[in-house]
Image (cartoon, rainbow, N blue to C red; front, side):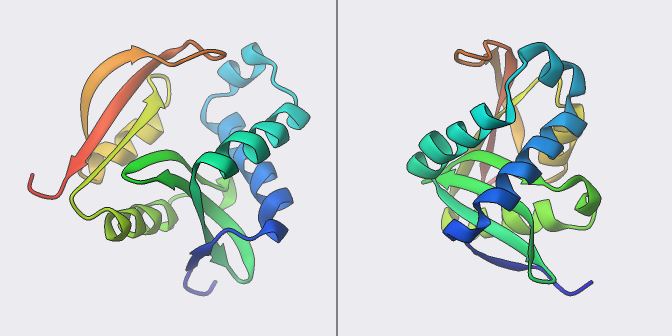
Length: 152
């Protein structure tokens, strides 16, 4: 496996990233995914019409293939997912480091409270939980707001 390349999203990435996003969420919280019942077509529409419209998307590529991605708007990380077969190899940390280069003073994000692996990952990488809440509809699920500050 070669070193990952972090690069901007390009339209050719759409199929690979929407599939990666779905698989990663199904692995991270399978019961939640089944309960919500979103179809893959709904996922594709949300990715196209919301994530790509509201964020800059960065792709971590391995051996010429998308292996992870991050959607970020200013200092807000909206999405960060790694393909299940590429987890625990530093891709997520590489994307966080890229986010820190883009926003060197502060970053923040939300994740679901049930995302225990994701929460541990953010905490291991210097993020601190600042608020428990409820995500907006349609999910309306318990979430955690995390912040990272350069000075802490």
